[in-house]
Image (cartoon, rainbow, N blue to C red; front, top):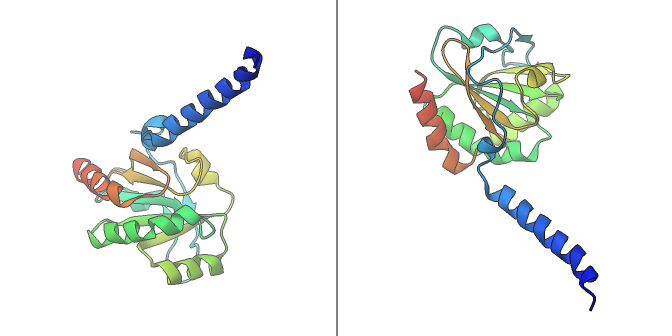
Length: 174
């Protein structure tokens, strides 16, 4: 065989190895957020569904640290993280949700099926707040201190192993 035939194989193996390496890295270390230690922008979102209030920046100022969870009813990883959000809620963490590009009936159905860990859920129908705070997708979760500053950004679904880390960060920013 001629050596030129090995070049595509070598390139394939290189990129496959690079992809494997990237998949094993801590996802929160890959994309450092420019919003860390900056205040939440001003916003006022209407309720995402009936019976649960909407949210605004004022909900994050003058109290305990909270989680801001960016999610959607059509998001499969959001389903996967639902038990962990419930676990955080049961541990006394207030979680405020932002439903992205969702219908009120779909939000209600999601909450009925997978539980509701949220004290409030705002509707971000055009992803304006999502983009403004630097969230690229769903789900993403932010730790917001009692002064309304973003202290940590968790990219992707919250897994069982992430719960102690988030509880520790919330404790540290008190």
